[in-house]
Amino acid sequence: MDRQDRIKRLLNYKNLLYQLQNLGFVKVFSDNIADALGVSSSLVRKDFAIFGIAGSQKGGYEIASILAKINNILGKNQVQKVILIGVGRLGTAFLQYGKGFTDEGIKIVAGFDIDPGKIDEKAAVPIYPMSNLADFIRDNDIKFAIVTVPESASRQVIDILKAEKIQGILNFTSLKIKSTDETIINNVNIEHELARLIYNVNQKNKEPHD
Amino acid sequence: MDRQDRIKRLLNYKNLLYQLQNLGFVKVFSDNIADALGVSSSLVRKDFAIFGIAGSQKGGYEIASILAKINNILGKNQVQKVILIGVGRLGTAFLQYGKGFTDEGIKIVAGFDIDPGKIDEKAAVPIYPMSNLADFIRDNDIKFAIVTVPESASRQVIDILKAEKIQGILNFTSLKIKSTDETIINNVNIEHELARLIYNVNQKNKEPHD
DNA sequence: TAGATTGTTAATCGATTAACAATC
DNA sequence: TAGATTGTTAATCGATTAACAATC
Image (cartoon, rainbow over all chains, first blue to last red; front, side):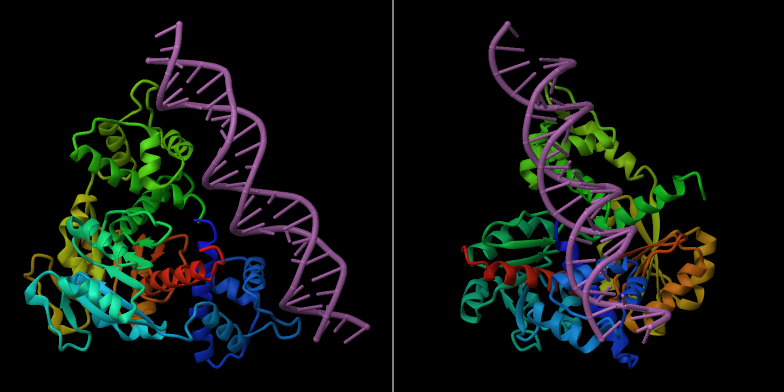
C-alpha cells in the first residue's frame, strides 16, 4: 500500500479544487487544503512537490494550474475505454452512472453477460453475449474492465480477461485476486468496507475515554 | 491510513480461510496464506500475534480457531443493523444483495428516499420516506448508515445522520467527508478506484523495462 | 533426533511531520 | 519592510521485514 496513498490524495485534491473553482476561487493555500481534507499542510506541499506542482510564496497555489497538472498526471487528456462484465444490479448501476465517469475521462463502451435476456446490442451502452468478449477487446483495443459478476464466475471471467491481455481490472467480486506482471487488479470489496466501518465504530466504543 | 491496513488484511484472511475450509482443509501455515494473498509470512504471523491468534510449531494454525477468533474480533456474534439512504441504482443493488451482507453479520433493515415513487413499506426491506428517518433511527437504535444519494444531497443527508447520532457512515457519494469524534465516515469513491487503476496501468506502461 | 514452523526481536524501510531558510 | 507561505531538509514515527531462538 506504498505510494497508492499519494495518488488517492491527489484524487481528493482534484475534487476539492473543482469545488473551490465552482465557488469562484482562483488561488488556495496548502493550509486550506489541509484543513478541508484532514491532512497536514506539510503533506500537501510534499505531495505537490513530488507531482511537480509549484506554488508561490505570495498567493499560494493557482487552482487552475494545479488542476491542469493533475489532469495531465491522470492522463485525462484522452478518454479511456472500459468494458463491464456482469450486467446485474451493480453492473447496471455503473452502466447508468455514465456521466460521472465521463467527468473522469472514463467511458464504459460495452457490457457483457451470459444471460441472453440481458443482451441488448442497440442500447446506449450495448450489452453483448460473453462469446463476443474476446473479439471486442481485440477489435477495440480495450485495456480496462470492470468485473461485477457473481463470485462463482469471478475466477473464470478474470482468467479470460487476462488471456485477452486486459491490463487493468476493477474487481467487485469478493474473491481477492492478486495483480500479475501483465494485469493490475484493483479489488473493491463493499462488504469489507462495511465490516471495517463497523469494526472501527465498535473499537471506538470500547475505548474508556468517551 | 495507519492500522487500517491490518484490519483490511484480517478480512482477507477470513475470506481465504473460509475457502480453504470449504476445500476440507483443517490447518494452514503462515507461508501458504502469505503466498495466496501476496504478503510476507512474517506479516501474517505478526498480524496473528497482534490479534491474539496462536498457532503451533507442529501443524501451523487451525483454521476453525482462527475464524472463530476473527469473527469474534469483528463482532459477528451479533447482527449489526444498517439503514440505506438513497434507493437509486446503486442503493437498490445493495438492498438486493442482502445475503452477502448477512454472511458478514450485517443486515440492511430499511431504505429511505425522497422520491414518493420509491416508497414501499411492505417490501422485504421496507423503503420509507425521508420524513421517517429520525424516528426510525431512534426507535430501532440504528448505529450505521450507507449513503447512496446523488452528490447534491450528500452533505445534507450526512448532516441529518450526524444529528441523529449515527456512529458509522459508509459514504458512496463523491464528496469526501471527514470523520468527527462522534461519527466515523468511510468514503468509498468508485470513480476514484477506476481512475487510480488507470493511472497505475499507464504508469506501468511508461516504465522503460517492459 | 532432525526438520520445520511459530513467535518475537532488532533492523530496515518509507511515509509523514516538524521546522525553518528562502522567497515573495 | 514585515509578514506569511512555499519548498525542502532532517527528525520522527510506525509498519514491514529479516532473522533466529524456542518449540513441537
